[in-house]
Image (cartoon, rainbow, N blue to C red; front, side, top):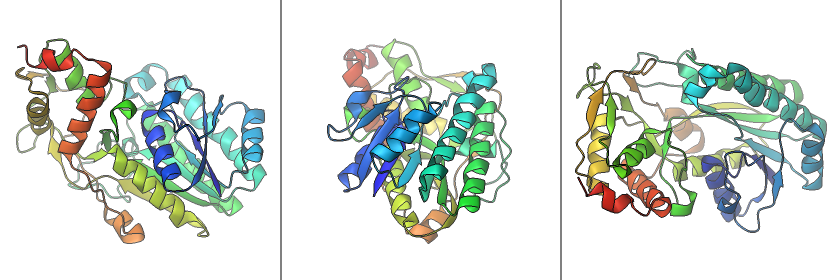
Length: 329
């Protein structure tokens, strides 16, 4: 069995590719490398450079590497950018997936894992978000992920494929420094970026109906995300049907608690500043992970401290001045 991993040079994709390869699975990566880092991949994992919109390339890759299963992670994923460029997001995330699924059906491939997102839920006002919570996305990024789920499930039912849609919550951390997130779009690297520039980390809103007034989120280590992909991939072998699974820890951490932990790990003396709420931020977004535990016996194993510590090591690898800057205030 060979697994095609699309977007495998990206932050999450590279962790998934490494985890599956190190577990003995045969892996090939297809990626346009527009935001990825090819050096993240193990030397023995083949990389095919190109776009999912190139049907000929996709067909050649599936046939040439004798692909029998697909893990689809390639996507545009910035919420703000999706609001500004909805046509681009629908083209990349929905049309690209359509082309891939057409090729997968033509090749007779029987297993398909789709990288979805908790963004499909929008801002539900519930204590724990389970897979039956209504999906009401509030931005084009979340819309494209929900449309992707619809496409994957419908295709699976029509063509007898085993499918899974994995809804990640807030991914953080790194298995090793060189695999860390290079973007500054998620809260932990945003904190690091401000500290490195000698500025106070920002907290958006402290008047939410939560214990300390700041937003509460479910953070999950990228190593656990990768391990969940491996578990789901192996579960799908020989099991037609579809799964929709949350991937998280099932525990909430407030932005204030996270800021305090970042200060402790980095040695930063910069006191966070509170600014106004951002539009669309839910007060609380924490996963129910009962289904994946029940179906697969899988649970996350790493905590928030491991996420922050490993992310900081990766940040410092790319920003050698960061340690000194953190302590300079």
